[in-house]
Amino acid sequence: MKEDIFKTNPIIAAINNDKLLLEAEKCEIDVVFVLYGTILTLPGIVERLKAKDKTVIVHADLITGLSSKEVAVDYIATNTKADGIISTKTNLVKRAKELGLIAGERSFIVDSMALSTTISHLTSFKPDFLEVMPGLIFRVISELSSYNIPIVAGGLINSREEILSALNAGASAISSSSPLIWKM
Image (tube, rainbow, N blue to C red; front, side, top):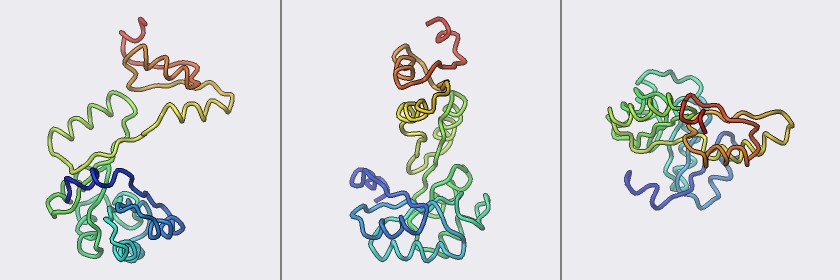
C-alpha cells in the first residue's frame, strides 16, 4: 500500500482547520495530511477521517503538545489510527519507519544548501515519500510582484532559462551563489 498510495491518489487533501476537516470528510480524495490539532483533539480528527475510509498522515511537527522526540511518533501510533506521519525532523521519520507507519519527510528546498541536506537524508535512509516545498515558486513571484516592491528570486537557479522564468514571472533580479550564473 505504501508504494502505491500516490500512484492511485495524486491529489492529497491538506487540512489545517475544522472547516477543511468537514470538506475532507465529504470529498472523494482518499489521502489526507492533518496539519493541525493538539494531543487532545488529534485522536478525534483521525477517527473522523478513518470513518470515511481515508488514509491519514499526521504532520507531527504541527500538533500542539508533541515534541521533536521519537516518543511523539509513538504517541501517534498508540493513541490514533493514523496511517503515518510527515515531519521535517529526520529522527521522527526514521521512528515512523521503525513502527511500520507511512513515513514522509517534508523538505523546504530554498537553496543549494537545503538541497544538499535533503539529498544527504535520502542517501542515509529512505522515507516512504518526500514532500518538496515550495511547489510553485514562479506563481508566487508573480503574485508578490503585484505589490510593487522589487522581488529578488534566490536559490536553486542554475540556467539562463530559470533566470528568464523568474524575471518573466515578475522578479526584478535573481541572486545566486554560483559564479557561473554571475557570468550569464
